[in-house]
Amino acid sequence: MQASKCIELKIRAEALSEEAFGLLISPLDALGSAEETDIDSDTTVRIAWFDCAPDEAVTKNRVLAAALQAGIEKEQVTLNTLAQQDWETAWQKDWHGMPIGQNLWVRPSFCDKSTEGRTDIVLDPGMAFGTGTHPTTQLCLEAVERICADNPPATLLDMGAGSGILAIAALKLGAGSALAIDMEEESVEACLTNAAINGVALEAKLDDTPPAEQFDLVVANILAAPLVWMAKELAPCVTKRLVLSGLLVEHVDDVAAAYIAEGLTELRRDTQGDWASVEFSPISR
Image (cartoon, rainbow, N blue to C red; front, side):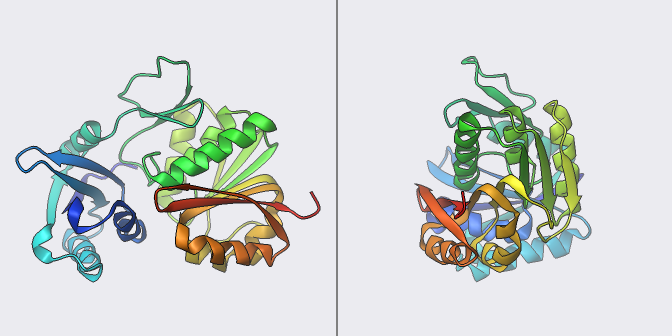
């Protein structure tokens, strides 16, 4: 879904780490994020965009309040209102094709395919969160690629799907079918749109709880607290493999304990910077 107008948040990198910035913008339903270098001062600036609807002033106040609560000085925060054309230009400037894992290439539609024959995943800017730039998305994509290379799942659940990037990657890597679930209507629309762009078919549902079904592979790139809350409902969905991310390294033990308590066995952990993913399998496997 593209926003006709959006709020652009800019914060100098020294005011907030990449990890803390991710935690700041995730609950605010960011349309996307990026980094740029301020040529005049030679400093890195962290950027995020938010839909103005339904009220521009309310959105600005909500974003500013979150930044101040995170301990950032008001003078270090810049908020701008961008028209649709400016918003699209900002995306095109700050988001480019990027290699992920052994054979994936994630790009916006205005960038070229990989020249190395990588599997192409195309996402349009302005859609729901999940462009492949965040470490947790990359960790999940690497896990999906590895699992599909070993034995593509017949069925997949992407819980908290965002843009649908994980489900789409799995389908392009041989998964039989995929169900994408998200609590935001914009994300459900984005999943269907992105699937069509990539020439794959998936089912997308608006919900905030796991379904009473089972899947060979379940992926959930959310945050630690909701992953713990939904452990009793999500763990029974898994028949072969569960991949969880959206986690800071310091939160992995708590999340792992919640799923081990539900009868799953931890298989591996992977990290990128301060972020982590963790994989599980049913004990009976």
